[in-house]
Length: 26
Image 1 (cartoon, rainbow, N blue to C red):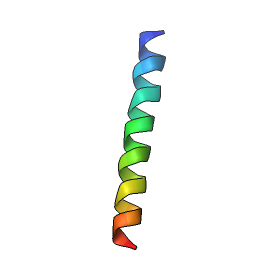
Image 2 (tube, rainbow, N blue to C red):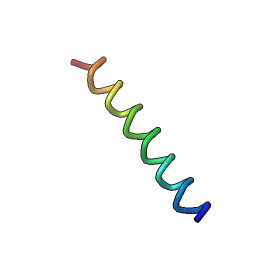
Image 3 (spheres, rainbow, N blue to C red):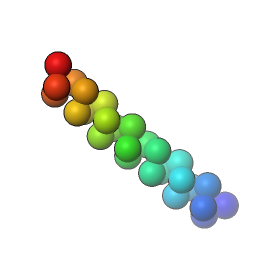
Image 4 (spheres, rainbow, N blue to C red):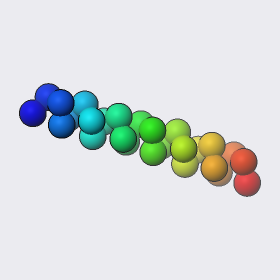
């Protein structure tokens, strides 16, 4: 479904951003 696709994409983007922030913070 479109909603599932958007939700999965959102998690992927947020996860990527969080990972970048954590790496940058360290």
